[in-house]
Amino acid sequence: MRPSPSGRAAAAALVALVAFGVAGCRRHLPADVVARVDGKPIKVHEVEAYVAANLLDEPDEPPMPAEDLDRVKSRLFDALLDECMLYAEAGRRGIEVSDAEVDAFLGRGAEGGASGAAPDAAQRAMARRSIAVQKLLESSILEDSDITDADVDAFLASRTQKTGDRRVLEIRSLMFEDPERAAKVYADLRRKRMTFDEAVAAYEPTPGQTTTLEVALGDLPEEVQRAVQGLEDGGVSAPTAVHGITYLFRVDRWVAAEGEDRGDVREWARYQILRRRSEEASASLLDALRRKVRSEVELDHLPFRYFPE
Image (cartoon, rainbow, N blue to C red; front, side, top):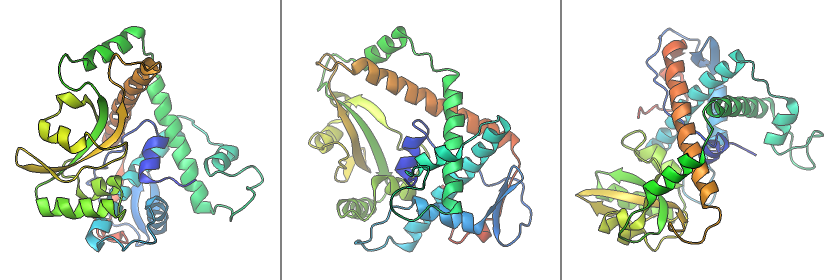
């Protein structure tokens, strides 16, 4: 199992990784060191291994333009810095990861698995860090994870409207000032040259702009309703103009409308509440760590051009 941009978000379940501020304490670092977080160096080869593990391969498709690819790599570098900061905090809190947990994360048994090459040291280190960060975030979430029936009732009541199409969907939007660029990205998505998450990493104009919105179809603007109503789960709309701005909309999934027969509605609501709380908890933890953890970054040492968000 390899972490990927979408897999990491799912693996942390629970978390929205946000970009690390790279304006920390600047010093001259050795040429093979890109950053130092909480006193621990992050070397060039570690960045290369992390990027390689998280980039999604499309062997039959033309490569992304160099600038777009560097934007994706830049967001992965931000995520690596966040992970390293959280990993250091996990160590301070005494969170441990066993070899058996690493084996399970990598999809291998204690004997190393029946087929395929054994993971190398870099893969095992990344897996160990990912597990420790997940444990840290889950422990932070559990501190405030008591979801009552009243919480569920309030959540469901907040979603109930009196008019419009009551089908509920989880939707994300990616905004473009240039309609031609939106059309190009849409074409790349249709040809599977990139995923929607990669497009977000490369083109999201404002951090957090593509946060998932849970909404009834009838509550969306008419232009958006027309664009998405025929999409299946995971579908992306053609470029759609709303108030003069062009968007691509992705339907993460459809949910049965309030009042329909869906026996798991309350469990689904609990999951949505937990996910929302987890995002708030992880963002709060990262903000606190950024204020207290010493960091140094030398962007010139990266093996690619860095693009700030």
